Amino acid sequence: MTKSGHDILKDRLRRAMGIDLQTVGHNSLRNAVARRMRVLGIKETRQYYELTERRAAELDELIDEVAVNETWFFRDDTPFTVLQRYSRNWLKRGRGSCLRILSVPCASGEEPYSIAIALLEAGVNGPLFKIDAIDISYRALRLARRGIYGRNSFRGRNNFFQRKYFQKTKAGYVIAKHIKHSVNFIRANILAANLPILNSRYDIIFCRNLLIYLDKDNQKVVVSILDKLLVDEGLIFTGHAEPGAFADSVFIPAPYPKAFALTRRSAVVCKPDRVSYNRQILPPSLPVQPLWFTELDTARELADTGQHEEAMECCEQYIRRHGPDKEAYFLMGMILTDMDEPRLAIRMLKKVVYLDPNLVKAIEMLALLYKGLGDDNNYRVFKQRAGRVAARNQPAGKGSE
Ligand SMILES: C[S@@+](CC[C@H](N)C(=O)[O-])C[C@H]1O[C@@H](n2cnc3c(N)ncnc32)[C@H](O)[C@@H]1O
Image (cartoon, rainbow, N blue to C red):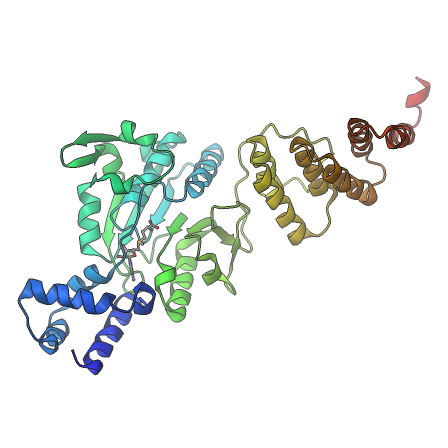
């Protein structure tokens, strides 16, 4: 192929699918063209190049060759856990409508089918959700509609769902019919002006591992399309290397570590199920907005399930966003206590007392931590201080009852 022919073809592919061919490797296009030429029995690269100009179907074949269809069930885990939390809450809010989800790109179907399974496992039944799944690759969509998978599609740590939702056959693992029928597959280019779903709105969009293959301009176009497709309070899940593509957009990271989720700056995110880590003794200092979901809510949940480091990360994120906060420091103090880090816990609790010298519970905790360290002196100091503050805090007249 002449240099110019190769470059023009690169350009056509870039326009056809937005892909920056450098991201998929220098030789990917040459190899893809060579494969197609072998199939068609064409010897001259120039001849092949002319064919792609004349026949749109051939360009689609080339797209199939170039597309990176790498995917597997429950890829990255956490997004699906967050999806389940979100959808349970959505159910509780009783919107009386259907939870609308988009998976773009869906490749060979593992992602949208994982979404369906996650929803069913969360108690959101078939009629309550609708999943659209889009990909540009005909080949990938054929596999998705077929719904038969090999081992490579089950690369996650926990394949609990395999027995329940697949039947093992000689051909591979066949997905259960009700899962298969719960996904509506559509062949489309997300960048196309006539994108068939442009008038739809989704509560949740999975757009993972596409943006990394696009050039900057096309990344921006996709982000603005996602903005059009997402409802105000919606969530977008991206791939782990992709949140950067949303910088300078209307989206900001949602408060879920490792989910790579984004929400609108102005959005409200559903509050999760109530959790028991409310060993928190502070009176609520946040305004009561039952629909809001903050990093501290997530931190409590994570701490409750023993994910202490992630919980600490959430508290730090909350402080970065909102400034020094006694509730966040208090929670960090409790988490550090659970992590058997009494000295660090003391540092956090001293910050709480600095911000609010009347918080008896924090002072009492400090006393207990010093006692645990065998520091009787400080134990006495804080114990007495707790007593004084408690007496001062008592409503007038209560002491004489
Ligand atoms: C790596 S897969 C990602 C699949 C899945 N979202 C995941 O994260 O596991 C990338 C997919 O993007 C599709 N794709 C590339 N450009 C596209 C475009 N412009 N519109 C729609 N799909 C596209 C490819 O066909 C391929 O199946």
